[in-house]
Structure formats: C-alpha cells, structure tokens
Length: 114
Ligand code: AMP
Ligand code: ZN
Image 1 (cartoon, rainbow, N blue to C red):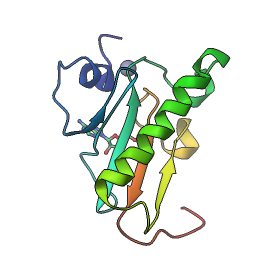
Image 2 (image 1 turned 180 degrees about the vertical axis):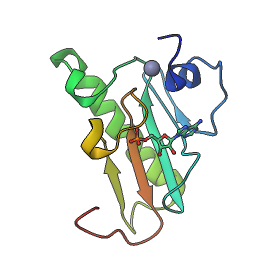
Image 3 (image 1 turned 135 degrees about the vertical axis):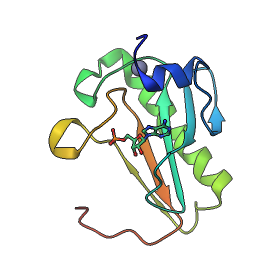
Image 4 (image 1 turned 180 degrees about the horizontal axis):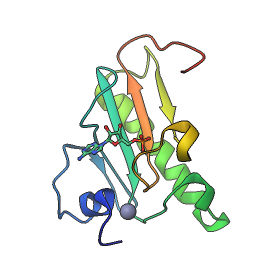
C-alpha cells in the first residue's frame, strides 16, 4: 500500500523510533504515548483490520505476540505487567488502518477499558 503510514514505516520511507524488528514485524514507539511504555507492533504485510485476518496469517499473529513479549522484556515491564490491545474499526477507535498491536505498560491499567 503506497499511501499507508505504517507501510511507509515498515519499508523505511518514514523512520520510526524502532524498538524491535525482524523479517515479519516491526515495533516502534507511539507518537502519542498513553503510558510510560507505549509501543506498536506492526506486521510488514498490509492488513487493514482484525476483520481482514485470514487463516494464512495465523503464524504472523503469533509472531506479533512474540515481538510484544520481546518489547516488554527490553522495556523492563515484563514482571510489573503490561496490556496488549488491537483496536478494530469505529467503536474501538481504530485510526490507522494497518493492523497493529499496542503494548502499554509502566503504570497500572484500569479495567474495564473506556
Ligand atoms: P489505533 O487508534 O488503534 O488505530 O492506533 C493508532 C496509533 O498510531 C495511535 O496510538 C497513534 O498515536 C499512533 N500513531 C499515529 N501516527 C503515528 C506516527 N507517525 N508514529 C507513531 N505512532 C503513530
Ligand atoms: Zn499498510
């Protein structure tokens, strides 16, 4: 996708504040952090929303969570805890239509979320 912000970050056209990368995913700091650690794990493949996931993406989704675990380790929030979130479409407030996993930590999280 030529006009997608997160595709541009994945292909290096825009330089994100990278925390982690491998051949399938990148992880970078959110520009508007909602917690002391707020990192987005983004697959290199353009998938607009959770609704667009296919069975062939099963391993990729696992890789996203393994990357989240690695981000949490690097950020020193594994033991204290953290939250992973995928927003899908309007009611969840999705604003970038390239699927991403939020990794939030470094402070206590309220439940239920707003
Ligand atoms: P969502 O609302 O779940 O689609 O999350 C999109 C996230 O992308 C928001 O938390 C934004 O702050 C974040 N974001 C938007 N533009 C950028 C950017 N240029 N660099 C890093 N994060 C961004
Ligand atoms: Zn994209």
